[in-house]
Amino acid sequence: MKYKFDEIIDRSRTNSFKWKARELKNNGHEIYPMWVADMEFDASPAIQKRLADRLKEGVFGYELLSEDYYKAVQYWLKKRHGCEIPEGQIVYCANMMSGLSIILQEYTEEQDEVMMNVPTYGNFYHTIEGCGRAVNGSKLREVNGRFTFDLEDMERKVTNRTKAFLLCNPHNPTGTVWTEQELEGICRFCKAHELLIISDEAHYDFVFHGQHTMLRKIAEKYDVSSVTMISPGKSFNVAGVQTATLLVDGDAMKKQIMSRMNAMAYPFEHAFAEGVTVGAYMESEDWFEEVYRYIKENKEMTVQYIRENIPYLRVPESEATYLLWVDCSAMKMTDEEIIEFWKNECGIMPSGGLEFGEAGSQYVRLNLACPKKILLRVLENMKKGFDGLKS
Ligand SMILES: Cc1ncc(COP(=O)(O)O)c(C=O)c1O
Image: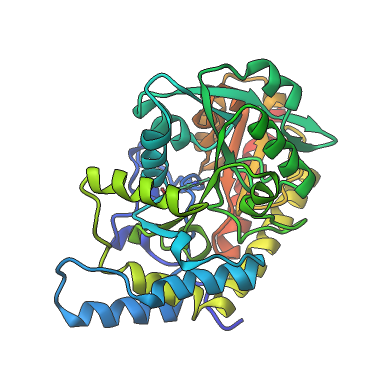
């Protein structure tokens, strides 16, 4: 292994959100954080060098991105996702959720509804509701151990106030990788109801089974308006640098989004945006491939361990992401009791299912992007905790 993913890094030297949470300190005993979706690994040497070089310049006035930024985004999308995108359709934004907020404010009115498949990423609710829009949630169905959307339910729920569909592609927290046929179903639905599709592809590089399809490829075929949000944040563990990209579907959308950004006093780019994007997409593919393999092993190991050792837990198929969606309903506890049990009896802080909406009740989500030595210890502690539940 070229990179040191086995090394345990001490994140207490940073202001890590995952590690600084009050919940981890409550009980006087060690609780390992497996919640917030970032990785316990240093960024690639190429990214670190790019940022260090920029830092050495010592001057941090207002900036504009150069050609290199756009070329890096184009390179990665073509190489890894078979998607050719004109430079004019690439728009920088600080992070994906601010992108979502800008899109909602531009394309929907207060009290309009945004449809999405639930349970899903908690900040989708916060951003939609924070913008004064309403969530119209359609519950995912589990079919043969894999989660998929329910078109009949979506047809029943859509109203004339529904103006956009927020797709999580691939899906957080369930890990479903949408097939082309499924995306075609979404596009037909959105075309029929004149919904803008907002495709969040934060986790698009971590697809372990099946093939990631960028929504925009299918949307073009069905002539549906769409905007895609991507970022090196998840793939390269650089979410703290606040750099994301919107892929718009043409000049008109670009103009509208840019003018909304200007209205929100958002015209300039982060001084580290270009370094992190170029360092990631152009110079760290081998780092990414190694972390991908490492996480794939972590995920397979965890699924097998839970299935063999912990009958109280059920793990549906998870085709993508470094996250695992775990059904705890056999514990016969309330959602609050489930979290307390994981913390106090297993020494693990998971994301509670309700963070993903009501439809996430009775589940937890585990983040598996950590050194194997830690993961093994965590799994043993998990087993010990659940063995105690038997007696
Ligand atoms: C599906 C999804 N979208 C977006 C984000 C956050 O993106 P950003 O930090 O760029 O707003 C996350 C983070 O966990 C996520 O899981």
